[in-house]
Length: 44
Image (cartoon, rainbow, N blue to C red; front, top):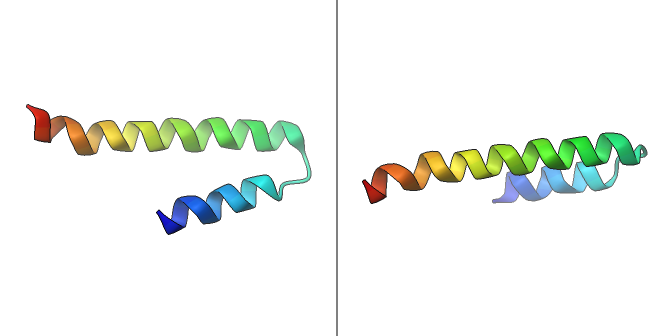
């Protein structure tokens, strides 16, 4: 979780709102995908 917080801080510190928005989408999509990869095998 610490790494996600660090990435979030770096994104928030970005000077460009457009880059920040794109990075947030990428991080969220990767986080959701990782959650699916982590939890789905346990439920099957």
